[in-house]
Image (tube, rainbow, N blue to C red; front, side, top):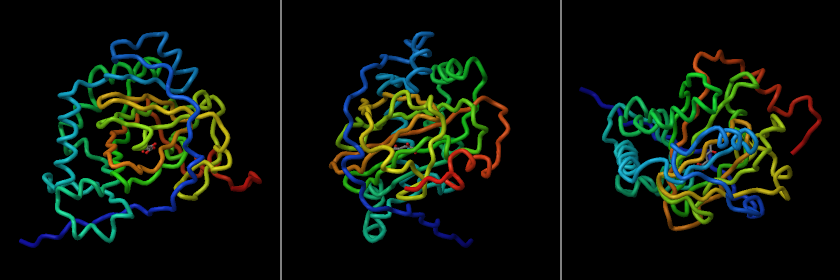
Length: 288
Ligand SMILES: O=C(O)CCC(=O)C(=O)O
């Protein structure tokens, strides 16, 4: 029998961001305790502000099971799974790291739900699916993207400001709900989510390929942003057009998170060309 070592994928890396891009004026003022607390007034809040935070969405046992599922994937315990991207900054040191130490070199783990029941239990959690249904106006939902964003201590690169819809070939107007779940405490120091509340209502913003596929820094500088620190098991629900980003993790603490995206079931995708008409810069006379 011949075996092939799995290909090791690295992130493209990028220079460090300007610190001014992540200096929030406020910390989230509004959150609910549990998914059971979401009713019509919280749905109205989500529509107006583009996000909703839940402090204790998952129990400590559910959160711990998700961490263990993730760590098993990273440690290679599921041989058929190879959806791991390492931080570019770990390229030189990776061969010297033990399997255990590799945990703190991973940037992203993705498309894992069919490989890991403990993670699928989170994306399919009945209470979460019921809330997504409310946010989609009563439509049945389809989860179309699953990933874990690890942001390891010291190495974890920024995810520059962007709108998630700029990455998805769904017709503009499709309600896309992002769910971002903290597995560790997400803090200002280790790279919690930062948001521009209400700006989803302004529609698509032009994106550029810079440190990533992102909103131009000069559009963000000087705007009022809000930080969303969360305890482990807490989550953020956000609209696919809400601008958000996370800074480099310059702390010594892990910041592991899961992120799932949901759209109404049965939506027909559009083309990349159509997406770029809305989110690309070509022909718009804008520069970055
Ligand atoms: O978890 C992060 O650091 C950023 C996640 C995010 O916004 C994304 O991947 O779209």
